Structures are given as structure tokens and as C-alpha cells.
Image (tube, rainbow, N blue to C red; front, side):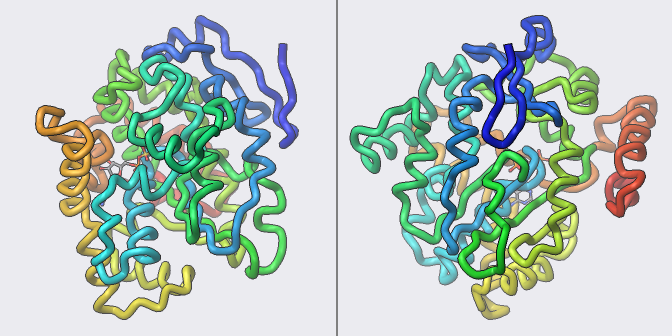
Length: 349
Ligand code: PPS
């Protein structure tokens, strides 16, 4: 039985066979496919997508939107720091980023067996404090976001077409700002593989090649990749959308921070931007991430967090066989053809 969302998308339950092939820890009520694009999300997403479609954004909101593993966490911390910690003296910065910058798409994860109908316990504690009497079924992160003061820095893995249609509909004034980050698909895929493999929540059991093929064929969670990127690419000239490539951010961080400074209107001096770049470098963020995890779990918890692995470009070269590379490059060429997305970037030779 399929049903329709307010966005006009149709929701279909993925078959047990399809879900089994994803080789992950089960989702209590399975996986749904959102058509026509075919996005695969946990069933819980359907509880929240209509609410998200009607979400009221504020003019001082910044939404960091990405297909997963494309640089979300990095950009979230950059934007949060520019807006809330430009002098690097805000004590809230010691708190985990997940408690400072909430995710619009996070509530779908409460269906992962590991979470048992809730979310990560520090988020639940914050929910109880900020939203007394709130019902979990109405979305933990969504309610925290509603109760949060601005400027809110939000993370979102949902694509534009599942968000409110009027979100970018008029002049710059009174609209939220969207920073869309993408990353060359081969590095995105490698990052996904290790994230799933090492995550307690997903516990991916497949091998590397399977994972890459699932991401390529749009047969695993969050996929397909290309429609997500293409929807944002079409909006890249909108005055409230800022499109960033992970590779550019990596190659010349200061140049990208200057562009962000203009886009966000933060007016930080070059010296302050240098400090932001330093504070959000891979080494600083991964060190801070470990400390934040320790603060929550204590010393005995694993020393790393799965959100910081290598933080480099071109790591796919250490993972792909020549045959697999050829297959993936053909898929990339097919998807980039007919668009003005740079094939050179997409192949990232
Ligand atoms: S998620 O789960 O979708 O939010 O993951 P996301 O943050 O989008 O992507 C994780 C990858 O980003 C790398 N990362 C960074 N790279 C450079 N600098 C900084 N500061 C940084 N922080 C996170 C992270 O290491 C993941 O990439 P890989 O290739 O796996 O290392």
C-alpha cells in the first residue's frame, strides 16, 4: 500500500528482501522508498516529512544541507563558529556539536533498533529539559529546533524537494539561508563505507564492493546521490543558497570562509576567519570530538568518533580496484552528462 506526502511524493514500503540486502542492523518498521526519486529512509521518516514540509523557517536560520558524508559536520562547525563563537570564547562550544546544531532529518533514526524508539541519550535529556511534556512521536529534534533561540544552525540530509516549497520563494529578506555542501562521489562512498562499518547504530556487514554498488544503484539508505545534488545545483544561483564543494573547502579554506562570510553577512575580519579555519581544521575538530564524547561517556568509551576519519580528498585511490573505478566512473559520467556539473570534479582523478 502506498500513500502520498504533502510534497506530492509517494511512499512505498521497501520489501524485506531489499532491506536484507542492505546488510545493516534492522530498522524496527523497515525502510520506505520516497518516489519519484526513490530516496530510501527508515520508516520513521514518514512520521515527520509532512511536518517538515510545513516547517516555519526563520530569517536568521542557516541550514547546512548535504547528502551524507559530504562535509556536513565540518560546515556545521564552521557556520556555528562564525555565528556563535567568532572570538572563540563561547563556553557552549565545549558541548557536542549535536547539542548545538540540531538535525532536521535526525528523527528518522529513532527507528533504528539500536536507539529503541528514542535518540542518542544526551539529545533526549535536552529534549526533556527544553520541551517538557513534548511527545517523542512528534519529533525530538524537530521540537528542540522549535524551542531553540536563533540564529539556529541546522543540519539536513533531506533534499530540497522534501522541504517547504516556499522556503526560497521570495527575496533574500525573511528567508533562511542554505549552505549546500557536496563532495566527489568516490570519496563520499569511501566515507560512507567506513562510517557504516564502524557505527554502533548501523553495523554494516557488507564488504566494500557491495557498499559501493549499493550506493551507486540507489539501493541503500539515503540514496540516490545524484538527484539530491542536482536539485541543489539548480538552485545554486538563488541569493539564499550557497553551494560549496568539499574539495574547494579543503584546497583553500580561507577563500571559502571569505565567501561564506559574505553570504552569511558575518563581517568577520581576516584574522578572525583565520582563527575559525584553525578551530575547525580536521585535527582540531577530531580532537575536540573525542573530548566531547568522553564528556558524555567517560574515559572508557572508544577514543574516536566515527564522524572524523581522515578528512582528506582522493582517499578513494586507496580503496578502489581498477575495475571498480571504471564502473563507478561510467556511472558518474552518465549522471553528469547533460548537466554543467564539472566532470573533472566528479571523477576526481
Ligand atoms: S555525516 O554523517 O553525513 O554528517 O558526515 P559528514 O560530516 O557529512 O562527513 C564526514 C566526512 O567529513 C570529514 N570531516 C572533515 N574533513 C575535513 N575537515 C574537517 N574539519 C572535517 N570534519 C569531518 C570526515 O572525516 C568524513 O570524511 P572521511 O573521508 O570519512 O574522513
